[in-house]
Length: 389
Image (tube, rainbow, N blue to C red; front, side):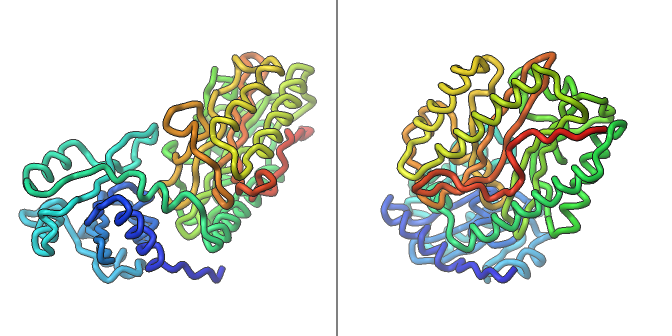
């Protein structure tokens, strides 16, 4: 796909946000920050430096620095490692002093999220900077990259569409080959091979693979994380297949629900409630709405349907480049409740409805916010797929 990303323009947007906050130097460590500006796959603990005058550079692991330099647009890529004088923060400190930033206002990324490998600044790193830069002022600059990456450029949306198409095609391959007697791991393998064949570069979730669950494993109370096991798919069981391809460092996330055999009345009722709620959620992702308004509308719906106690009270999460899987989440929290959705924000609409003894259903699909409501980037239907064994 011919998509050209203007990384210098991205740096300019970061600098604009820095100036608005009086920040002279940004030291970004989160995965999404490093990837968004670096323009390469950067899996190691790294520091991205952006100065107020437009300098951009990256310090990353020595053994991968040459490959990152080759893949990235950046000229300033420095290799670091556990060698005296070459430690990541020793190198960064030296650069700060050599460029006269040791008395500057320095922005760092302080925070937390449910995602274990988000990349926030460690406490030991913060203390190191405070001790060695006594005349600098360290401030939390978390909102800079959150703001810059919030609304997606047309080029980003093209890449997200391609990643979504890979997920759709992989779900179709799973459906074609699915049969009773397969293990969850076999099903994961079918989906993962299909994604690789179609250009997926990286399997990104912390679960380590696709998330596949069948039967009782779909109905863990409020459960929404299901790495595959060697459990064998049985006739009449609920099955969820959750796939996570990456295309040119942009994520997709697509979960779909199946039953092999005729659904029971209880399963059919759950599927109907799920579909109604999923359609409402997607239509509610409308420019001008707040996260809190969307959350409340969906929660009121599952309550009216009698499924509130079985529904995870979180209805989406952010998506974008590698590392961007949290901002913003569609949850009823002070962090996101008042955040206004804007056109071309892209979210993963998510819905987890698990009824013990009946089945569990999971929605995850990529949705673009528009003035008229959400536009699904995925083509896989929301409805439960019923397959006769």
